[in-house]
Amino acid sequence: MELTVLNDTEVEDAAAKGGCSAGSCGSTDDQVSQLPEHIREKVHNHPCYSEDAHHYFARMHVAVAPACNIQCHYCNRKYDCANESRPGVVSELLTPDQAVKKTMAVAANIPQMTVLGIAGPGDPLANPERTFETFRQLSEKAPDIKLCVSTNGLALPDAVEELSKHNIDHVTITINTVDPEIGAKIYPWVFWENRRIRGKKGAKILIEQQQKGLQMLIDKGILVKVNSVLIPGVNDEHLKEVSKIVKSKGAFLHNVMPLIAEAEHGTFYGVMGQRSPSADELQDLQDACAGDMNMMRHCRQCRADAVGLLGEDRGDEFTMDKIENMDIDYTAAMEMRKKVHDGIAEELAEKEAAKKQNIIQIDSSKTYRPVLMAVATSGGGVINQHFGHAREFLVYEASSEGVRFISHRKADQYCEGDVSCGDGETVLQRTIRTLEGCEAVLCSKIGFEPWGMLEEAGVMPNNDYPMEPIEEAIMKHYQKMIDDGLLDEVSDEQHVSA
Amino acid sequence: MALSIIESCVNCWACEPLCPSNAIYEAKPHFLIDSKKCTECEGDFADAQCATICPIEGAILDSFGVELNAPGSLTGIPPAKMEAAMAEIQAR
Image (cartoon, rainbow over all chains, first blue to last red; front, side):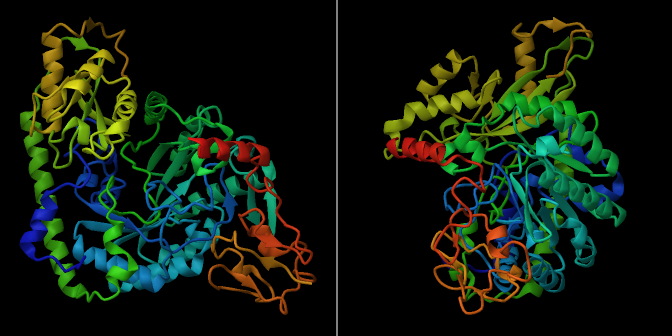
């Protein structure tokens, strides 16, 4: 495929389409709106930090950092797969020069791309020369791109000084525990001072380095987000303490992600049968931590070489062989990018204003129990997707207080035409299982067979709101459920937010 | 007296900067150790550095051809368990 720099009209089109999903979700709960102004200014167009921004702005990762200095039980260092979308997986390792070229090619072709991250496939700070060379060149050649980096934290204290030089105002540290006993169950070893240190002793070193690095970044005024992998039976309850501690040290956002563990990934947890958390368990923990800390709920756990809006990956369009001969006029690209970014800002402001006007107000003298609803959307903030075509569902909670975004849930597409219909039924059943806990699913269209199966599973299918804005449709449907007498009134004492 | 890297190497670069003798070099399909330069880190470190950071069991051999990181020693997955899981996946 030939890539060209888009002209202005195409750019506007591209900006109008959302790659991933919904419009401005989290009307009562956008974590960014709770942040102090100086931080909000830094994150408002960062798709990974702002729930609102992630429907409009795109990110990319460049895989320049293959080496790692620790082993995690959820990671298999042998993994390299084009069809897998999860952290630690890449298809093509890049040199810093190649990474810079790729970043500028993507920036010129996907003007919504505002953020370049280095996230692996190993640990970026265990590859300091490659990581910092990439940042150094990009700070100079593409100053309109935000740079960020994620790390396990082991080498972080030594890297803080260098990080502060490169226009990097966001760092993500993966902190799964602050207790070496628990750490020994997650990290079999760390490489430290020329030795492989195993078990509790290794975990203790890692934990100390993470906490020290976190403090140093905060002292330098660099924003820190903390990622934690929720591992049932290992660190689940403990993550509440982690959340308190990282907040007290000054991290601005905590992202609790579910463990991904399948035997076929060849990871310790996968092979040993460690289960992943259910959607309910994840949500309960996020809600429990939310009292202390801004929680992030829209993370898609993307690959170390992902390109595009969260939830989509356009990496295939920008492989090295495709971009090698591209000639990028970055000065022109920067002007065009600015137009697009301003356009998005305007659109977001309009949507925000419209949302305030249009949302149905539920009679606040009565309280009804909150309801989870799933939505099928292909972007733009409206209900516009066929149930069978949805790759993911967005789950919202409707309550007397309004709508809030809860999570996304991945679904296998069961309806792919004639090719794969043989296996259709089991995939459909799996999809329905992922909607557990939801009382309705709003989509543009739905087939007869899944309708019946969903009903049977207690998830009411609905196609009454095609092309309507998500939050409005959800509140309408919530009101309808109240009117239909499906939601008994609850007294305030009984009211527990789900 | 020299170590060697075999085909299970995943080319992660972790070992290359650690070698005190600059004996490790990038090659296709995987990294190699120059046997003339390799000292097995004797005199420099207590443990051979490449084998100490290598995440792949069995990828680095000693001069007798013995794996420096035996199966299960780095991931903690008992080899029998790994075999059973892989056999189960194959059978699907």
